[in-house]
Length: 149
Image 1 (cartoon, rainbow, N blue to C red):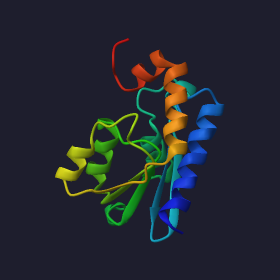
Image 2 (cartoon, rainbow, N blue to C red):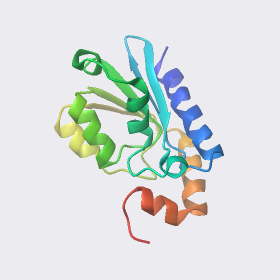
Image 3 (cartoon, one colour):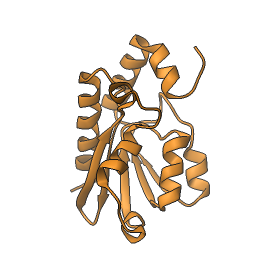
Image 4 (cartoon, helix red, strand yellow):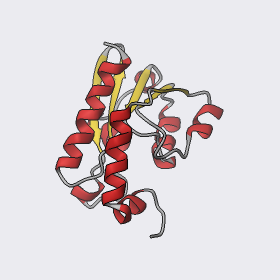
């Protein structure tokens, strides 16, 4: 499977999250061609402070040995925030494929400084989904990224 095909899994998760009334950010963790987990932002659905798309994905993948994380790629529909970048760095995930970074970018410099390979696909589908969500739900979006209204 190519990056595009794995990104489709993340986009599917983002769309599911949106249909549940949540923030449309999805993720997938892949190693050696095997999908280890998928997830979506569930902060709204679960009343969680930390269930971003990437952290939900990691939680759904379950406990894994360090050697597995160190050969994994994390696919995410939106450029990671600092919380999610911290998880990438903590577990030594060497590669992150990003659906888009036009509507939000926070931690790409940090990730690159630590040697993480970033691939930005710049998918219009991801941009449109986030722009529409942010326009319709600015307070919820600001809460998600830790910004005052």
